[in-house]
Image (cartoon, rainbow, N blue to C red; front, top):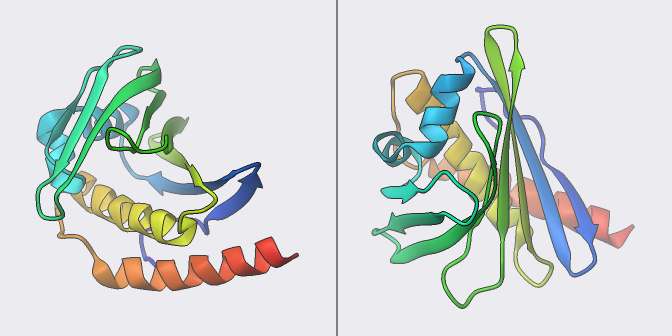
Length: 170
């Protein structure tokens, strides 16, 4: 699916939610990756214009102007520069927690992303969107920002939907 090393997604049903875990290894220092996940000037390179207050209960605001989606959430967990969690939800929507975890690997970093969505939603599509954004993150960290990679998204969406259907059927 991708040439940057995104590992295959792992899905798990947990009651009335589905949890997807994505992971990749980045050839960057922890501080660089943390900055890309948290600093407004860096978020715009791979995600959306926005701001995240780096404290428990802090505001997490992201504005996807092209799609009309505005995320206004709250930081639910933070341990700089290793852990950041907030919900990927607009006001009035169900919580869709995102948990970013960074693990040093010598001079590199393993980035683990766990997202949780209601089981009634298209978890394959959600995970595919994040796979595409992880591709954008890796490119931005390499100094060559890219636009949203729709081909990565479409391939991942189809793969993840098939994977989910097989896993949920068993």
